[in-house]
Length: 124
Image 1 (cartoon, rainbow, N blue to C red):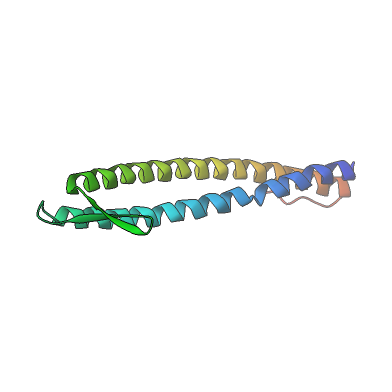
Image 2 (cartoon, one colour; image 1 turned 90 degrees about the vertical axis):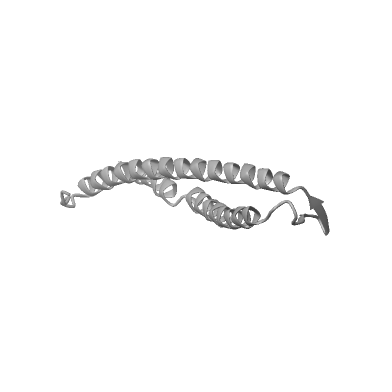
């Protein structure tokens, strides 16, 4: 009986120490940095007028770009980044909810394990 319980506890522990959470948080942080960078670019572009020349870096080459086109590109990029940040926030909240469920299952399994060993169980 104790062996079966410990076999149930092991996968619950592994689910709690998920690498997916770390990966998702890292990706979200990168997106936040990109968001900040693109907001700065947007502000800088709004300071310019049609007399200024805008260049876009494509590989190792700077290519002339229309100001309105540059503003539109940055705007679309900001929309995309914001959407990705929302997606990661939803994903992280879902992972947090699942993690809490795993903690609850693990706690009940540990209590069951302790009862099977004859150890008094502290109530929360």
